[in-house]
Amino acid sequence: MDYINRYALSLLTLAIFVVASNAKKLTEVTDQNCEVCLKFMTKFIDSLDPDVKSNPTKIEDEFRKACKSAKKAENRFCYYIGGLEESATSILGEMSKPVSWSMPADKVCMKIFRKDEQICDLKYEKTIDYATVDLKKLKVKDLKKILEDWDTSCKGCTEKSEFIQLIEDLMPQYAPEAAAKRRKTREDL
View 1 (tube, rainbow, N blue to C red):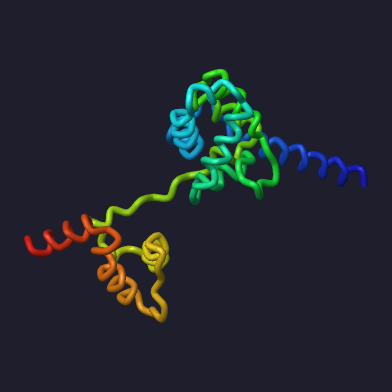
View 2 (cartoon, one colour):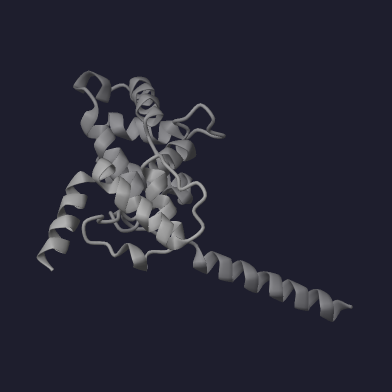
């Protein structure tokens, strides 16, 4: 019986060691390891008026306003630090005080990361160059995503070719420059 307890304790210790050694360790914030926080905070700090920059309460109010128009990954970032009404927790003070001290965005993100590591797990979605992409090589999921970004859908579409046809039909409306480049490329061939 004692042997089983020691074995279980050894396994538990090993599991804790493995989890601790796999924990995310950041020494600095960059575009590669914390892109959403860094880009959003840089844009936010640059948009603040000088009279707002020195007051943490005003900074938090402005942050909440900025979060109202945030989409996708930036909206998620706002949710994580408490910039949205539906946020479960709030660590806005970890953001607003350093900003009021004129701390740069990368250092602010590092402070936020120390409180909530998932901040740096956020990534922006890859953008598709509509002018050069071969729609036939995209997955149906990606084709649906394009239509979703254009606030439309392909009702009744069952074949990949139907999605592609709809995208090509709508491209002049939603991505006119890309449609013109695609048309010119076809004419050159």
